[in-house]
Length: 329
Image 1 (cartoon, rainbow, N blue to C red):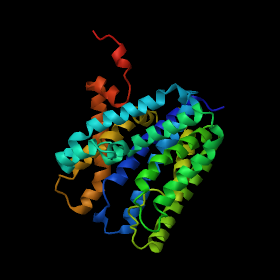
Image 2: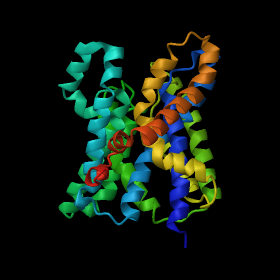
Image 3: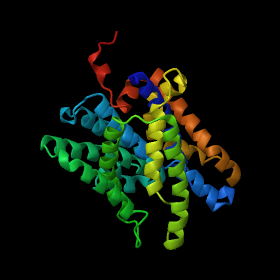
Image 4: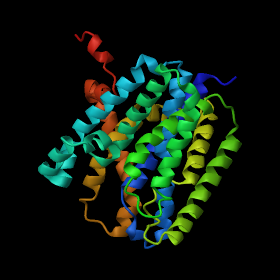
C-alpha cells in the first residue's frame, strides 16, 4: 500500500511544476521566437497546471477524510481569494488605472476573478466547493458524476469548440472546477503506475497540439496561441497527477518542500514580477528566453522572504490563521 508521504511528496513536487506552467501561459505570446508553432507548444505545455490544481484539491479533500460539510476547505478558499484580491489591487491600478480597478471591485466581475485575471482559479475553487457542499447536504451524490461531466463539457463547448465565439468561456470555466474536483476524488482511489501516468501525459500533450492546430484550421477566427482548454488538456492533467503520486518519498525532497510551501504564493504574486520584468529593455528574443525562469525565480524568492521575514503575512496569504491563536513573546 502506498503511504501518504509518497503521495504528498510527489504531489508537492508537481505543485511547483504547475506553478511554472501557470507562469508560462501568463507571460505573453513569445513573439520573439518568430514561430507561432513554438509559441503555441510552450503555452500549451502549461495548460495542465490549473486542472491539476483542481484535481489535487479534490484528492486532498477525499484523502484527508475531511467532509465538505465541515466547510473548512470552502472557508479557506474564500479567505485566500479575498486576501489575494486585496494584494493584487496595486498591480491592477498600475496596469488599468484607479477608475477601472474600482469598477472591477464594485461589480459582479469581482466575484469572477477578484482584482486580477488569474484569480479566477481561486473563485472557481470556491464555486466548485460550494456546489459539492450543496450536493452533499441535500443527499444528491448520485447526480455528481453527470454534473461533473457536464461541467467539463461546458468548458469545451463554450471555449475551444464554440464555432461562433468564446464569450462564454469565463463563466463556463468557473463550473469546470466541479468536474476536476470530482476527478481528484476518483483518481485518489485509483492506483496506476508511473509508466501509465507518463503515457497518458504524453498522449494528452500530443492531442493538445494536434487539436489546437485542427481547430485553428476549422475556425479561422481563432488563434492557436489562445486556446485555454482542450480535450488533450484533460488527459495531460490526469497523467501529471498519476505521475506525481508515483514519486518515491525520498526523491526531490527539496522541490517537494518548496512546492508545498510556496506554490500558492507564486501563483498569487507572479503577475507582479511579469510586470517588473517587462519594464527591462531587452530584445524580444532574449526577453522570451529569460522571462519564465526569471519570473519563477523572483516569485519563489519573494515567497521565501515572506515565510522567513513576514511569517504572519505569509500565513494570511495561504489562508492559515492559526498563528493568531498563539501568544507571541
